Length: 217
Length: 217
DNA sequence: GCCGAACCGTAACGTACGGTACGGCAGGAT
DNA sequence: ATCCTGCCGTACCGTACGTTACGGTTCGGC
Image (tube, rainbow over all chains, first blue to last red; front, top):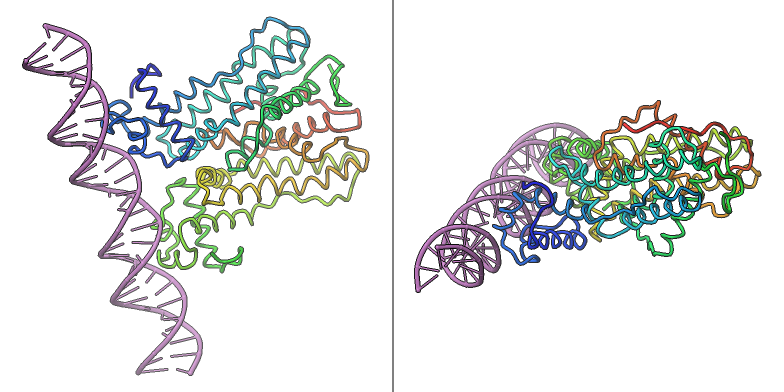
């Protein structure tokens, strides 16, 4: 197993072929199919990636390196820009988890999560849910420092945000339920999740169409 | 494939062996291993369940028939009993999704969700997430009729409840993250999820201290 | 022009597993 | 006692796939 994601152009093409097959055929991606699709020999696959697990791991890392979650500088700290940034995070995350590549990747990582040998689950988790948490926490804490948010534990607040955004969408998609996550629906879901999050953790008393919001120091 | 879950005692034992192997070995449950574990012949397996997919499907249905989510009559409609029932639902659901059988079942269903042939995903979804929704909606609507809750769409309200309860727990468990969902943590998570749900959809303005929840494991 | 390295295409090997066939045994019915 | 049914245990078959091996081709360096 080579180091990180410093693959050559050609190797990256091969990994993209793996991802394409993963989306198309699920876990039935065989070494022969990859070799044919990528127009390379199986010998090269083994030389480059060691074995099938190494190939899948590299493909997962390649996709993870491409998933770019909205990154907002904690610059503007007024209420409206905070809300905007939160909405960006929410929409970005919904776009990621509803994309066919993400669904396929999570499926293969989950199906390999049982055996101790495979690190696919940890990689997906690290570059997905935990990366999002790392990026959001500073913003949440800046919001708290600026008096816009109120919470005791940033991790817990983030988990609530996560739940409000993801709801049942990801598990339904993973289990094969057909959900059409249009860009329109993503925008609406993100907006309402942020409204609910601010209703729970915001300190300002404005709040949108949700009648009642808890206030308490 | 026989009809529903009218298996004999012996057949149910076989399905339990499948579930045990599923928990223990992930998707690596082979027909030979099932036969050995259940002390039956492969020929019998094929006669009873048709093929491997039929066996897995039957095992999933067997487990589904055992999972029973807290069922509350919409009798008492005062605020405290509504809250209690919601907490029961939340805790029950957390218990289900964090159980090793549920994790193993969801894993195999998800890993088979790619191919059009398998109905495992639909079965798990139908007996899990959708069953919970069906049981909760009448209670939510009774709460609204009684003036305790306020929402426009019961389905959307349920999805929010679902998100507040599940948060990132299920996806992390599915991806192999070690989380120790003790009965204590289940109770605390359920209580805080219900607090947040009532803060968003409740009509009474009291609301407890929802400020913090437990952190991750 | 020659050499070696890298790589392609394909054939071959070993194995694991789904599915089938068969012999044997227990027990109930006749 | 005999037969039939249902099942166990096991050997067996075909295939798919991971992995390896090998001949042929391209290409950069000398």
